[in-house]
Image (tube, rainbow over the protein chains, first blue to last red):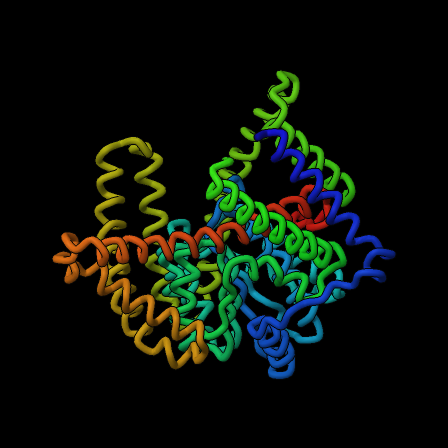
Length: 247
Length: 205
């Protein structure tokens, strides 16, 4: 079993590097289905630049030593890309989180964006901050940012629990645009019931690729698709074999 | 400096990952300290973030004449008092733990109650937000499972066909959740690999 896991990791890495190469990208360009919520996010970025309003990204409260933190890593990649896309605005994005490690990383990402886009004078280290260390204190602490008059769009990406309801309801009430995505099933169902733009399941992991972040993101999305077919095929084959009494 | 950060991150990631698959004593002896350092760093990061929240974010708000000045004042005083009590009594002191939980538990329970009511009201408007077939299916499944789990169908336990049908219904969300979790697992794998090969560098590498 360990060998299979190791093999999957090696094949996924090789596949990602393979699809990211320039030649393969030209030969097999990735084809994306339309995800309405991400299309609206792109529009919201444009509107925030035009209006001179700010975007707020919140990353959840998963610890960096927790397996659930990949959704927060996607949140950080998205924060980076949002910062780049809104660099023509004088209002860089703000970021809140419920974990110390994520807070430091969000500060780092915001600083990196300010260096890349030559907007160092707009960088404020407090634009990335912790709002609380328990789920509810994190949600209540973020209320202040969610309700700031200068914030007109909220992007909720990360690992949330039931406190997701506070984020989505406050955001829907106070801002024009909310995009909600989580790897937690509980948060996904809460987001679906309380917001308009929700990403379900693996759609969360497609955000950086859809925001045209880098070839590696596009390649990794292609590999995910291939793996999904393989897993689906294996499940169906397993079910048939079980029915036939072979397994 | 950036390249050094990236190299350290990649090497550490590879060693930790190999430790899961290869039971070599050499790799295990390198992996365990790395995991311990990660936990220590995570704790220090938490401390830095808390100090930043109190002495930078809320201190700034206290100096400004904003609406939330009062909340920042309460947070500041509460933090200082908890810190002093924690230092003098120690975090394992039962009196100190009682004091903290006596404040925290009622507040969080009240928030949970507020959340439950707010969610119920917000969910009623769900069909206005999700005007599509998925919204309809979600709404329908909420109604069906509310009925099934409310206990009004308890009398059907003696009727074989309906009982089988209801237990079949209970399997549907499990299957759906598994489908979603498979997608999330594959996404997590791809994200982890991007970080491992240095393509995604949230540490400004």
